[in-house]
Image (cartoon, rainbow, N blue to C red; front, side):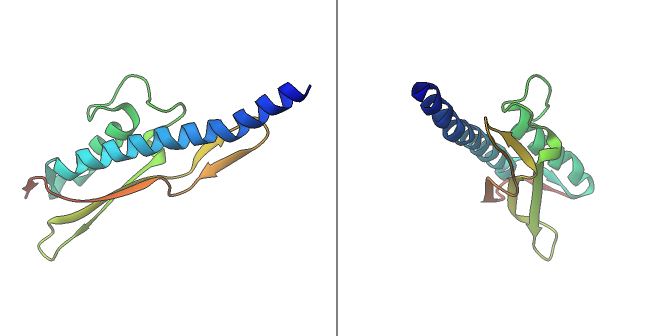
Length: 125
């Protein structure tokens, strides 16, 4: 009985750390893509969708299996700051409202992990 209690405790603590690390890696990859992708002000939704697909599927075109179980594009937020001319300066990618289900307790990650990078891609107007 003690062994099962210890194993459950290890899983209860370790699984959320594993999920957070996987999300952190996916967000960092998405932010790296966003920092060098083309940004067209007239179709900013396409830029956002590509970054979200990069976070969820590991590809800007999307499709396939999610890198993290139960992660969807709705759980990814992409925001950017612009200068006076409308050119992006920074891009922030974060996970919002993502539930993590452990053995005895579940919790929701809100606005974490997150990554902010300087935009270095090509601005198309």
